[in-house]
Length: 264
Ligand SMILES: [Zn+2]
Image (cartoon, rainbow, N blue to C red; front, side, top):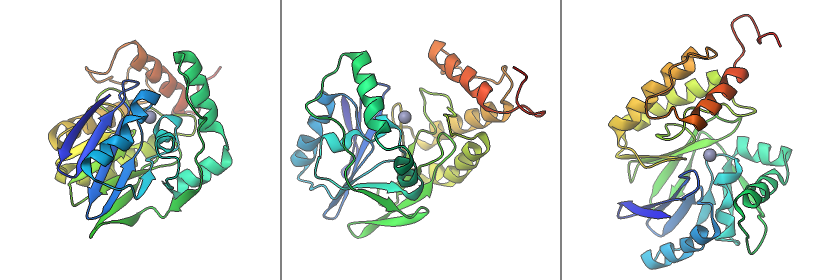
């Protein structure tokens, strides 16, 4: 796991698995942890990271309900988990799914954990909306399209945007089971004014980005999404390895063609 301070009050940890990001935002006497790292040895380090900084946890936030983002409860089993209303609805509709998918991934990776995942009391937050952080506020922005649920977190005190699974330097836009191309495009356009004024953008996967680099990714991702469902939709130069081509093939199946879904 890598951990870097992007600001005296912000630490970002990145998992070895899928470069999944976990962001600690502190201001005044409050601290939120957004999303999670994945492996037990990485999660174990999180409480110490906060203790070392002298920060006391106020709560956990997740950008969306995919299992790889909701694991911080394993590090802070007593903490409340704040999610967008759309994510709360999704978690209610698919109880136990994140825990099941974690178990499968752990089997694949031969990883053992001291205890199974329990999301505990999930707190649904109104999105768009605001959440107090010391004498500042976090802005919660709708971010759907990758999945049917989610939010991005903008911290004006730090000028940092935690955008969830958008604007990744390592993963092309991925339309999952209940994802939607038009919603994804709308989310990118909604995020753009925040990206433009951000010091740092922390994507769900991959290293943090300055505004210029995030805007370049945003343009590439819009061009890619708008060309779907063409198989020839332009994969960004830095994101066209075998795995990204598999995701692209998934996306092509997912977006209906102008004349309806392709014949079987
Ligand atoms: Zn993810």
